[in-house]
Amino acid sequence: MAVLGYQEKEGESLTTFYNLITTKSAQLKHSVKPWQKTTNGELASRPYNKERIVNYAAALQLISKKTTIPVPRLISFGESNDGTAWIETERTHGGVWLDVVRDQCRMPAGKQHVEDGGECDECDRIARANARRYIAEEVVPQLNSLTSDTTGLNGRVIPPLWVTFHDKTAYWPPKKLKSGQPEYVFCHGNLHGHSILMHAETLHVLKIVDWDEAGYFPPEFQVWSVERADYEALYENAEQRKRLTELML
Ligand SMILES: [Zn+2]
Image 1 (cartoon, helix red, strand yellow):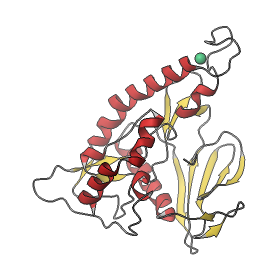
Image 2 (tube, rainbow, N blue to C red):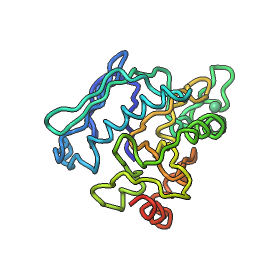
Image 3 (tube, rainbow, N blue to C red):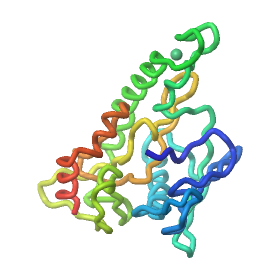
């Protein structure tokens, strides 16, 4: 899975889908042109590439206004005539992806769990437990309190990556609730170890980022995991995928 939306170093990098510019105080994520070739010759496009950026901005506005969930501060965003869009957010310092915590012991000198300060299972365990508790107790209840009678967000439906990886339906129209159905709830859509930014020293949740696929979905699709294997298993879960497309298309 591509690592997007956060990097510690300043500079510019072109991923398969975005041009990412990081300065001291901000980060600019600009979608590449549809079907542009990247430096390694890959075709730089995927469904909803521009819409993801626009959707991320809309989700940040909603989440920062209606919840206490920590998200990057939105500075600006917009669309260009060439079929691309961009979003500028305040840069977050001192963070580390949950999935990367394990790479080294995060404790200060003298209190380290491993002698050489290298790979640390204990830091990984602490960080995942903190993230699991925080998401279950603080994030998900607040997301579930945001409800709608229409799928997607502001007229856009961006299905989760574990669906679009297989399902190539070009357009998912917003769908209205049928009577008797439970209301749609707001979902992050891609909540796992590479969208959860942890404080590199305290190992508590610092920010929840990458709300590109966020929107209103049936409550049973409020799915997330702090365990990478669980999250990746979603990609192979044909039944779950079938269920979502039946309810949403
Ligand atoms: Zn450690």
